Length: 314
Image (cartoon, rainbow, N blue to C red; front, side, top):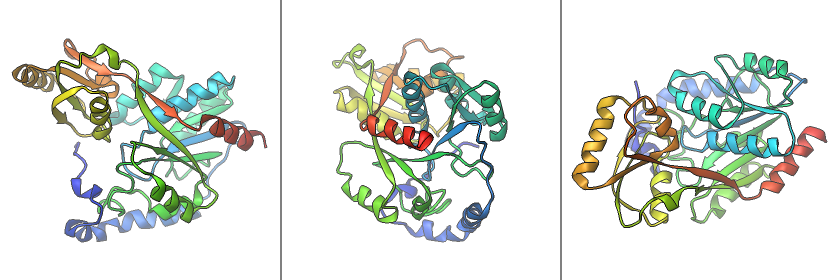
């Protein structure tokens, strides 16, 4: 069953419902403790990178994986991406296949073995930070500046897979910016782990000029952080008259598209969705539905490539 992320997860402070759910965080706490003692396997025949998160959804893992793949490929590395084959994450798999050379399997060790057989030198995992079996050479924790840590509590009281103090065991952070001051977030990260590397990202639209700013627009999305999508359009002066939000990884059907088009027609508006949602309606009637194409920019890219080179070659 697909659910929309509870709004109380992203309150600045926990509310009563968050506290009532605290007993149900115990399995997560136990699992996280066990992760620290679990012996993980490291295959020395290939370098592995994990793009993961501790905040559930909407941190930009897949775009970051794609961007890192592009950067390393341009540097001449034999690189491949990978994601675990979850049926509900089909959208991410399709986008990875479209923009990278990728491997998909239900078992991450099988992915490692496949990448080695393909004679790849670097394997980038989209997700898998909490995997109990794989030891990665580099682990990146992705954050979105706006949602940040939500209310700061573990699932299901809040949106965190691990407490923020877990940054002590990680070496790098990708922090996706939205224009607000980030100094307090940087300070918190550094207070937990003074040696951690922080790399800054933001989205830039690629096809914004194709949209007529005198028109009205209805937008819809089923992604982890729909605010990013809407904010980017508003920032570029598009007139958004309404928004339909579906659960993350939502699988659309014909009746959904009919309702969206009918609502747009009643508003006298054109329709825009995200690239991630667009691939999920490929089997449906996409006529009169446009998509916003975006590129993830890594602001301190040279620092990132120097860091990876040092980690891999010493």
